[in-house]
Image 1 (cartoon, helix red, strand yellow):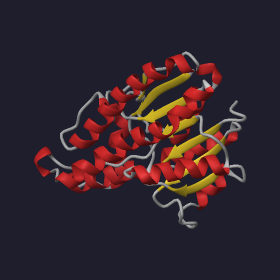
Image 2 (cartoon, rainbow, N blue to C red; image 1 turned 30 degrees about the vertical axis):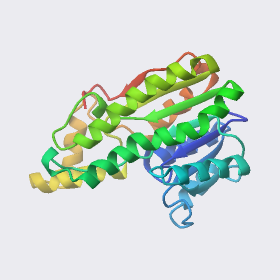
Image 3 (tube, rainbow, N blue to C red; image 1 turned 90 degrees about the vertical axis):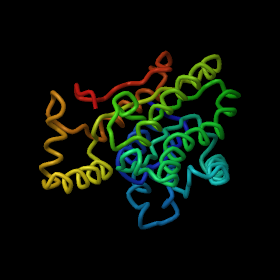
Amino acid sequence: MLENKIAIVTGGLQGMGLSIAEELTRQGAKVAVGSRQGDNQHASKAALKAVGDNGMVAALNVQSSESVEEFVQKVRDTIGTPNIIVNAAGVSVHQTISGHSDSDWESVIDTNLSGPFRVIRACIDDMKKNKWGRIVNIASTAARTAAETHAAYCASKAGLVGMTKAIAIEGGPFGITCIAISPSWVETDMLRGSAQIQAQKAGRTIEEEISLMAKSNPQNRIIQSSEIAALTAFCCSNAAAGLTMEDIQVNAGALW
């Protein structure tokens, strides 16, 4: 259980981030959810319910060092010094390499790779001082298995896994663990967006496309956000003190 722990979850208004925030709260942590729409009460309704009275939801743009610093200070002032970080914010674009504009490429890299770096940088000195910390970076099977229309996404997640390993080594003497969790297709809005694009290209319905995604793995199913949340919560516990510098694949037996 995670009593007396203070967690930051980025990208926590929907999908995996929201499920993770809910599970960490259920296990006793005080959870701060950060999102670009975190100051929008309507958009934050589900997250506010998930974290309860002991948590908080606030605006956070991981592409901005200033926004990250302001958010982390707000967490310290409101619920306490963060000792758990879950970097779940992520974006993707569907483009061939020649179709990637500079802005598309930079947005994906900045959100998926530089964003986690900024959040970790803002919190790790406190973790070192207190001799305890848990960092979970939500990566992807795309870090190991490429796709021709996801160059920026694949590059960002591969970089995230590399950074995870470096931080694990740095944090080891201070009781800080750092791991990556790399899911295959997960039942989220991002999955449905990808399915819609692929379905339009192939002349299929979204439901048909999602069914094909499920059949791409031996279990013939789509991973659920609750599965990623349960694994994340374990990785944040004292029971996982020796689990660090790993890239845990949650892939239902598939390569992608």
